[in-house]
Length: 253
Image 1: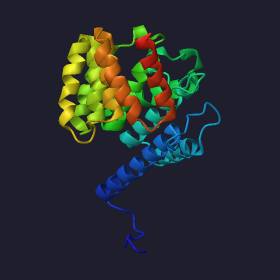
Image 2: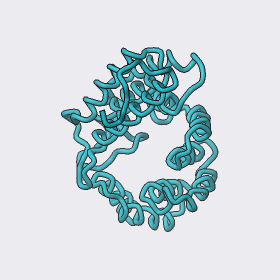
Image 3: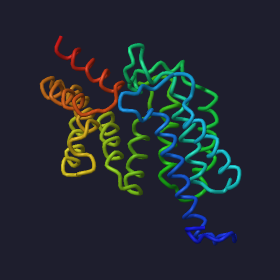
């Protein structure tokens, strides 16, 4: 009543605007549940947090109502492919486990099949949006039976596409990792340097953590330690802090 929105069926342009808002809220819900929002929280293996379950349920309702909406399909695929990795995401001592060293036997293959099926069906149909591209990246990771079999060339290309359609420094940060895997860590570090002037991410724990990882790949232990320590002091996540402290310990042994 206060918004003045009527009960009439909206035009296609207005409907798309509303769908976009709903998708964004569902993704926020999913991420809040997946990361357990509380600063000292931890990601549980079971049960699935209520926000994740509800975001998936509502996304399925939206997909059933608008099966032709490509980004809604892409978001559902992204949620499924992300949630499929939950059982392997946290280690025995509560630390975040990097994707490349996760036990892939723990991944939910049913969700992976559903997610890859959805994104494979929608990608060839026309122009793509950010959720579709993110789902495609997640699918490439999920399809690799071992980390060393990951198609990093394809992931790098997909992040390049995502960077062109989404103004988000986290995308550039992730592309730097893919760049390092394809062209070497120095190429990744060069790309990361561009983010030092971006106020949205400069000085954050994510930037320091990725830079530390790439410095370690080059053999520069001093710079890696410096950045791991900076990342550990800035993160608000207990599970990430445990992981970062373990990296520091491993490097100073």
